[in-house]
Image (cartoon, rainbow, N blue to C red; front, side):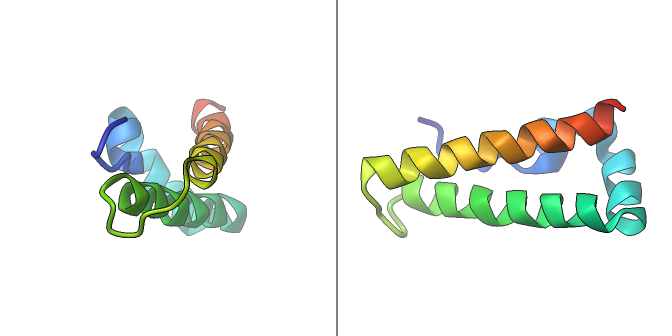
Length: 78
């Protein structure tokens, strides 16, 4: 378990400019990025016990974050 937030610009450093451009130009991508940010922050709060939750709920959040990251990667790699 890592207590480091997985921000998009850290996950895809070589795509920072493309992420910014897609957020501006594509409403669906902007929503994916926003959802990723919200879920990622919830995972980080759970990991650091700021907002503790049971293991199953935390695992579900991690899975949701992974799905969103995969969808974002689909946009970035296109």
